[in-house]
Length: 232
Image (cartoon, rainbow, N blue to C red):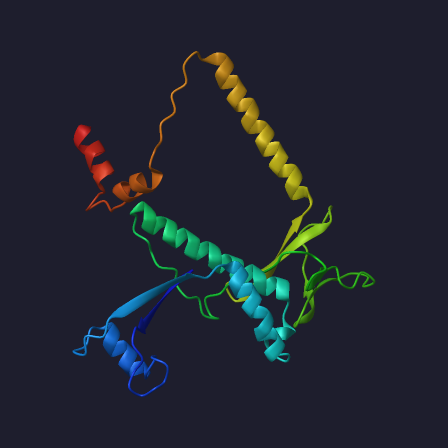
């Protein structure tokens, strides 16, 4: 995330170190009649900066922010960092940037705990004869309804809101095996193509542009669909 600070070059008459009142700074930034030059300080705020600041926030708020899992809060900061990185990548590419939208409590539908045992624990009460529980730091033991048994060690836990209910998603160690199987399938498909054809042409399709040009309705079809209708 990049933050631009607007500061006056010369100290203000009030002797407050050049910052002045918030209203004065806004007036100078808008170009008031004083003609005071403005310098722009560009700074970049990454995940590491925010994670370090989070430690101080938790230390100052032991009964509030410190109640929750630090790893889970870091996972949220990583999501924020990815959103802003993607935003600036779109700006550099000249595409419609779409500034990341703030999600309030009513729109924030997923919380992640990156590692089982760090702020969360799957099957936290194994001695229970019938029910399964998951322990979430700051929340406690929560009973979950399993649709199928877990055959591998749980690595990551995500809690997602689906309508008015919350669901627990588990990512087990089996995920790495599935990834290897997908890569193996892709390599076999590529090898079959190489052996079957003497010439392979690769076309760099701009899927985002094609999707935008194809969008529309029956009454007002998109450009791509309109060309297809005319050609037919």
